[in-house]
Image (cartoon, rainbow, N blue to C red; front, side, top):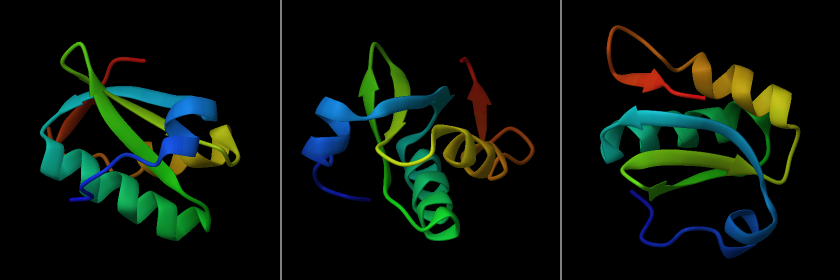
Length: 78
């Protein structure tokens, strides 16, 4: 898991999704989606929820992140 949130994405990025899940699962999903999309996707916890953001194409990022969902590894809240 990344030690720090990407400051530019945190401050200037658009919300891709809000998820409920463990940090290891969310980190894996965002890393895989970043590789698939070819641009950075990052996340942070806020209010007990994982807020996923990017500076790239939000629709492409959302499709890729949600494509990482399997069984009950995480739940989409928004």
